[in-house]
Figure 1 (tube, rainbow over the protein chains, first blue to last red):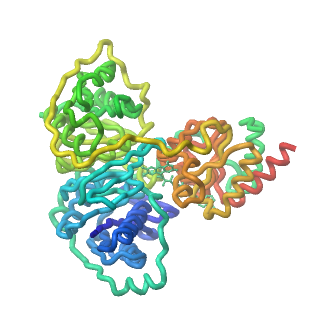
Figure 2: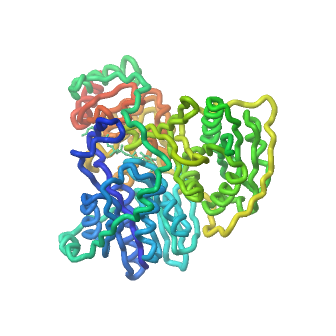
Figure 3: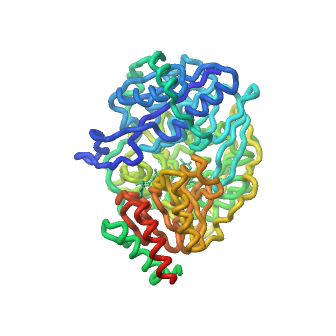
Amino acid sequence: MKIIVLMKQVANKDAILRINKSETWIEEGDLSHEVNESDGYALEEALRLKEKHGGGEVVVCSLGPQRVKSVIKDALARGADRAIHVVSDDTAQLGPYAAAKVLSEAIKDEQADLVLTGLQSDDNGYAQTGVILAELLGLPHATIVIEVDASGEGLRVKRELESGWYQWYAMTRPALLTIQSGISQIRYATLKGIMAAKKKEIKELAPDAEALGAAAHQRITKVYFPQKTKQTQFLGDGDAKAGAAQLAEKLRTEARIF
Amino acid sequence: MPNGILVFAEHRGGAFNKTSFEAVAAAQQLGASLGQPVSAVVLGTDAALASQVATYKLDKVVSVENPKLSDYTPDGYADAMERAVRALDPQFVIMPHTYLVRDYAPKLAARFGKDLISDCVRASVADGAVTFSRRIFQGKIDADVVANGEPPVFATFQSGAYRADQAERGGEAAAVESLPVEVGEVRMQPEEPFQEVKQAVDLTKADTIIAIGRGIKGQEHIALAQQLADLLGGEIAASRPICDAGWLPIDRQIGSSGQTVTPKLYIALGISGAIQHLVGMKNSSTIVAVNKDPEAPIFDIADYGIVGDLFEVIPVLTEEIKKLKG
Ligand SMILES: Cc1cc2nc3c(=O)[nH]c(=O)nc-3n(C[C@H](O)[C@H](O)[C@H](O)COP(=O)(O)OP(=O)(O)OC[C@H]3O[C@@H](n4cnc5c(N)ncnc54)[C@H](O)[C@@H]3O)c2cc1C
């Protein structure tokens, strides 16, 4: 089975975000980055499917500047077989349709049995790139997938619905699935894996110019910190311990918890 | 000329989702500001369901019909909605940002060569132009977004962005129009939805919930929070990453995929406050947030906040409560 996993690099979860001068995006300069959370789970699922079903190939594909190589190398160290890096410096403002179009051009000749993506990115959070990609590749899709059964000729996938409900779908293969975090426990890269990764192929591609240059369907005009709507009583004024003591008092006298 | 606003009313097995009526409220407000008529669209096998939506103040309700629409599938819904949108030619298509809409609507938009302005928290109109606001970076930053290019503009609204009870009812029922549509090959077959075996704990009954997030750093630290919960006679709960990591069972997960709770006291320790978490706990009576990041979105819904390290806060809080309890 040949599985392509799309992986995006995003700002570190604990990064302190600052707005840029023109108020059109965040200040990128001093940010640290990491792999998008659900994409890490998508890779893990691909590796497990390959192991379970007697081989094949796991190909990682990432779109972005040179720094995304760290995501690619980490994926190769965990067990992906090779990688495609669509190199583009300016992807922050790329809408999901354009991103999907660029990715579809990059992977369409691979004829994969499965394409896996995370269910949304932790930065822009569009939650669309995978689904649009499926449409552009002519593949059936399922989103928010929490279990995959590929033992038969087609697929059975368990989708998460709201409020603790689930639903299985039977579907044809090839297909595209967007994977939910928590589908399985993510493995660590071993030293052996890290060494082996050095010999694995990373193919660099230029993004399809037409897809990249097409007029965006949505444009960010301004970014800012959300306006606070609730009057929060901040306690301790930066002193956590003092805050804790005040909180105990408030819970007794104001909230009357005990 | 494209005209009007089309709102997608979602149902599962005949039960409408509350967020559908939030979307109706959003569409009505947009319609009022733009001076454009608002119609709703309901997908199904016959017009029976559409009449439930017709009680709202709408130009009309279009019942988009095909036998293949008896159960939700992304292929079926994308085909049907594409035909409805082409037939009705609206300027805006408004949808709730539910798991179902997330599943098919990007495919629908792609049929028009575009994407969705997804998960909006607001829309405002100035000089006839609409600005949508989306919350990005997991709720930490807002982005104002404008649509480019030809209509229709597809937009989805976050759960809670508008209130369902603000959706206006009409004086008399809106007209229901049947629109039979073609639906092509459907490549997936759904089985019955189900819940996992009965949950071991029912957090909805707890008066006090101590919830931990990724800030707790390691499974070995959960005992700290557990002590606090025991002292207050409460239950321990968590954000998704804690359950994903297997540190706590999934039945202790709070949020859109987990449980929705409204305890008297909810203490969030090291939880950032992503919308998928907030929807599960924001109606708690008293909310306390402890987070080292002063900009963490969780503070926006907290009654009491402590900006600081939870490993400093929990021991002191536990001690002080012990003292006060005497
Ligand atoms: C379809 C879908 C469904 C989802 N369903 C759910 C759901 O049901 N429930 C849910 O919770 N999430 C859900 N999520 C995930 C959600 O989007 C967030 O990713 C998640 O809630 C983040 O969890 P967190 O706040 O614990 O982690 P993070 O966002 O990583 O936040 C950790 C916080 O801890 C703080 N911190 C770190 N160290 C310390 C310290 N020493 N002291 C104090 N503070 C500290 C940090 O400042 C940060 O704010 C869902 C996502 C999707 C896309």
